[in-house]
Image 1 (cartoon, rainbow, N blue to C red):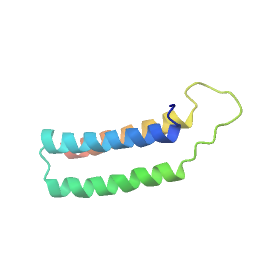
Image 2 (image 1 turned 45 degrees about the vertical axis):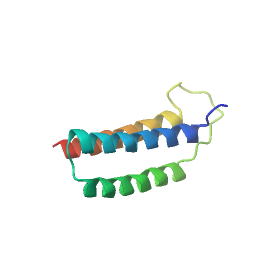
Image 3 (image 1 turned 30 degrees about the horizontal axis):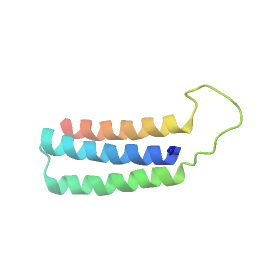
Image 4 (image 1 turned 60 degrees about the vertical axis):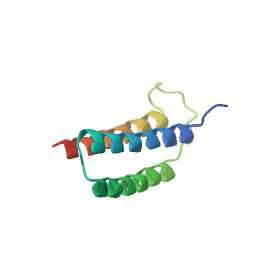
Length: 89
């Protein structure tokens, strides 16, 4: 069974949310009430991002890195790291 790009992005978003919860709760000791709000907001953000970013492959062969999957992954990772960085400050 081969995973589609949408499935890969969904799995990464779920792992990112899990990572946010673990780091904020166990490492940075953020209150649980704040974490619940963060998870709700970022779940919605990731859902909207996944819903509105279509993965239509272009016929022209370009660079290996010119793939919508890589850009989606990069954006999710950057959002996760930015959220953790904001609470670490």
